[in-house]
Image (cartoon, rainbow, N blue to C red):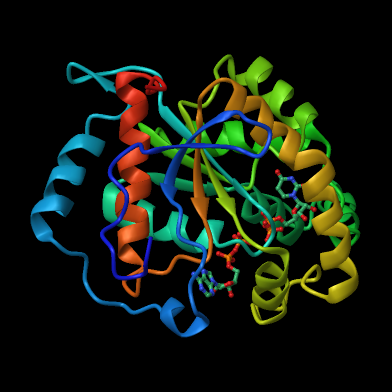
Length: 262
Ligand SMILES: Nc1ncnc2c1ncn2[C@@H]1O[C@H](COP(=O)(O)OP(=O)(O)O)[C@@H](O)[C@H]1O
Ligand SMILES: O=c1ccn([C@@H]2O[C@H](COP(=O)(O)OP(=O)(O)O)[C@@H](O)[C@H]2O)c(=O)[nH]1
């Protein structure tokens, strides 16, 4: 598919590397770098935006009554763009964005004893113990009282996943996975410029290893349950807005159950 073609229809299917079923939002990787520029052009078409707002407002509701929150895990390697896209989805479509990494960094900033060990773990690119991260997420979810939540950068490993499901008593409704080439992730992390202690080449290499060995099994687990919506990065559409429009469309699909292979 060329760069100027229309985006794939909702819920188009693709097979993952290991043959699992994945809902593929975008499958457009053969793109010249110049076509990847992004712009801040307002979302269009407006009618589509309106429809998405209407549908997403139903996520986490059952006939207008509150039920369990609609939970989307947003996974992908370091620097794959999770935080950037979550911010856009959250501010445009009424989702609460909880970044596990930000919650951990806030704990560090609080000066707590726990914060010190979290800082050491992050500096080494390792994964913070599940009970700490799940507790921070649980508290943040409770405080926000949100109906629709994007949990960004968590679970990082099977142990995280199992702890979340046990403590929260629920699974995510959907998992969005950013599949980004390693070179692109490294380039982005080195250019992130947020003064992060882990955005240096030594720690980045460790984080990438941890991602491959511990995070990918989580993606595989949810793929086997038909919950993963994969996004091929970099996106080729000049208006990146299309990305989050389509990712939200995919979140919506989950409300009517996974799509069956035809
Ligand atoms: N589509 C994109 N193209 C180019 N750079 C991007 C894109 N999305 C995000 N970035 C930049 O890459 C860096 C990492 O993005 P971020 O959203 O923080 O990733 P993650 O949350 O997955 O670690 C940031 O500096 C961000 O501005
Ligand atoms: O659930 C989480 C999320 C993050 N981290 C730690 O926080 C770091 C930064 O994670 P974040 O999601 O903020 O950034 P990313 O690595 O995805 O760019 C990771 O390398 C881990 O050390 C963690 O241990 N558990």
